[in-house]
Image (cartoon, rainbow, N blue to C red; front, side, top):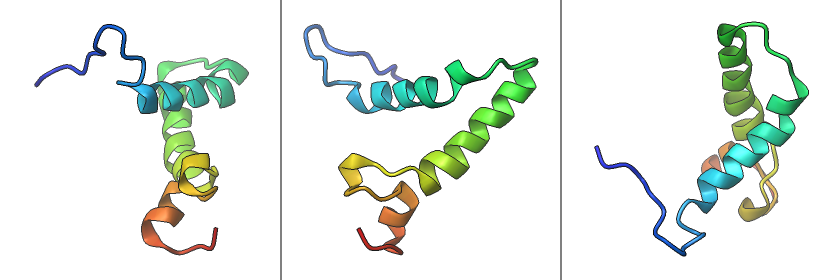
Amino acid sequence: MIPSMSRKGDCYDNAVAESFFSGLKNELIWHHAFRTRDKARSVIFEWIVVFYNRERLHQTLDYVSPTCYKEYTCVA
């Protein structure tokens, strides 16, 4: 396995991952106080699978969800 590391001076190497984690933190993590790691895992999993992939509108996908965009089941 080869780790993904940003090249020196190239801020766009991990832009997609940085954007995802920024959304996760701003929309979910900082608004909750999780009592256990298991609770945090289940809430984060639900946020990714249900909200982020199926409901959240993404600017780069013509303001539709990734699932909708991939399956062509919606109108932008």
